[in-house]
Length: 346
Ligand SMILES: C[S@@+](CC[C@H](N)C(=O)[O-])C[C@H]1O[C@@H](n2cnc3c(N)ncnc32)[C@H](O)[C@@H]1O
Image (tube, rainbow, N blue to C red; front, top):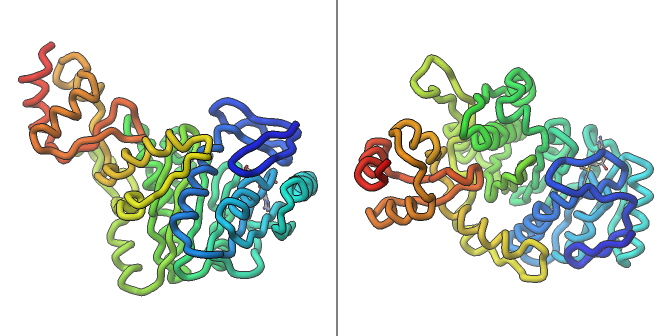
């Protein structure tokens, strides 16, 4: 079966539909990941000027690498160590008249060469692939990381979160944000061992996975500053600790502001909406209207109405990708209680 995604045609054995991670078949193609690839193309087009060298470390069907080559005009290497996946990648390279180099290395052990962009898109956790990527990324380069092991990162498997990500992630209404911040913290600490200061420029929560883009910089001041933003927090004043997590920005707002999203992509409209959310999402955590309503014994207000009201009062307020009833705002808890009591009567 032949399908089209971006400017690429793909011959596939199977398609994983729906929102879940799907089966782990060679040359695996997931529809739920199209938006992650569209985002990757947008980010790379806006980050790099001119040609650059990219590595698709875990190729699968080759779709990501082939799209990067064609849509971003990059010199691309696609890697996978599964012989069946390699066959599929070769077929798809021919189908698209691509010049991508194909390698069959164990990506958890080594990467040859140096790259401006490295894409880590595993089944499950990216942890085994971080060291080789950090050894092969160029200064001012970019790393794109996917994690699909959200139960480990969002407190469902509390112990695994500690073992794999060295962070205590508590399950609650904002655990999807805690998990993302725990992953960022882990990757930043790991990169510090290579004297690299990574910074997230765009962070995406795709329902069952995270996708984060890190720019790579050097310098002891940047490294020190980065580590200042990794902290453990007291959880609701009870004797519980959350973290360590990254408490710094999860998006680079200047980068996001200038992000051009081209209309030919399947998810361009969706990404334009996300862009608006990303622009106001750096505040740490959010309020859940459901939690607030329970606390103040009021009905749940309409989220857009509530946001406009807060804005009219001069506060910053916006939705978040982590919850459809979540609000990021600089208004205090006391202010919110007052608004609930005065305005949103039971
Ligand atoms: C989730 S798929 C990649 C999906 C693809 N990037 C996309 O956007 O559709 C992960 C791929 O990593 C490959 N893989 C897993 N472990 C590997 C390793 N140690 N070295 C190289 N490839 C590996 C698997 O064969 C599989 O094809």
